[in-house]
Length: 269
Length: 266
Image 1 (tube, helix red, strand yellow):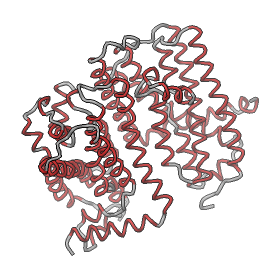
Image 2 (image 1 turned 30 degrees about the vertical axis):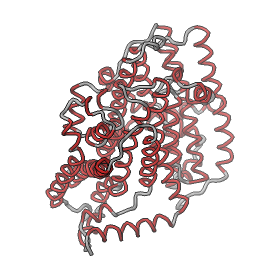
Image 3 (image 1 turned 120 degrees about the horizontal axis):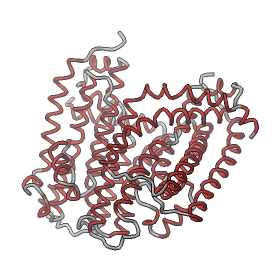
Image 4 (image 1 turned 135 degrees about the horizontal axis):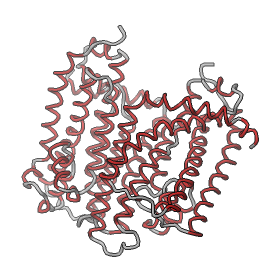
């Protein structure tokens, strides 16, 4: 831990180099953001049609549900498993040989890069908020306390995603190819995070599954805090659950990394 | 050789090439299946909880979804790699296509066998057959012909739109992500009864980006739901023709844009 803290300035410098490189892909990034906004619009239309025929959904009012879905989808788009791609790319292109010779550990470099990328893309999300307001719906957090809890929870969600991305990327050390797995991961994440249907509406066996998976840390918990659907002791319990996942995935990432290092194949080296 | 037999000969060769890598082949097909199944999971969870979407039951929405997916899968099987045109143009690889004794567009289309499309197509057929057991469609011979024409028309319509966007590669070098957005619109909006959309959106999805003709219009005909349409039912009966029209337009665009190709890197 102290080694990580000592190396923080190095990681900060690494992260600071990244936001500009994101601009090289701005066209593709904007296009994928447009896809998310279309998805938000579609969710609004579908859910509004569902609600128009029902009277037994007062527990989750439509306006609140639409804000939930809008924030959840934007957030899942922003907090993505980019380290998986980055690790895979380094392995494929043989760059990994240079990376592991650097004075800070490779996983740390990848997390720093992820921080930088997310900071680079964040302004686009901010710019998309007015469109998201029209396509879906947005309202301010339920209270100042909800807003603060949301920010904390969002930060933990990011850390959890960084670790999940790393773990996915490490698979490339064995298989060299993770495209198929990534597609499955992205959907599982969107779905089990509650990005399409809030967990409260899941049929019970599926809900049990969702509550046993780490994906709920990505939207269900943070956005429920934002909306004040989780308050007081419930809010703290939800945050604690997020931290448990963070710790578990952290331990797992370290263990897998130790094995992965011995498996490195330097392509073209 | 006629263009069609040439197409099949080259596709078969491409398929054999892909089959050399068995595991990769299986993974790609599985990805196609998983991608499409996951899209349906949302509708399944939603309708098993809420029963109805604008009066459509789970079976009916599944029927619509399956119908679209079969057409989509067919389109991917034939035109799955059209988004690569941008890369061929940018890297100068397109030169090769111009000097070979094969029609240029055919060459682009068969440049690689879209393995994942097998998964898309197969999951479409399975979903359609399962959904068919949940709804009461009168499968008279005209209905069967109409369904077959619908699938072909849907494939032509999606392929045509992609080809129009891809043709712009000769002028603007970046068209891939635009093709992905077109794909996204069809994948997302094509699976729902368009009745749930407001007037403006319905208009756009009918006459702007003609998603309605792919499966929604034909499904209302087969399910006896043309009464809910905001447009004349005649348009729904003629839906398969929209594909032929868009594809014809795409071929004209392609012919118009092709001479603008400027070889890169030479």
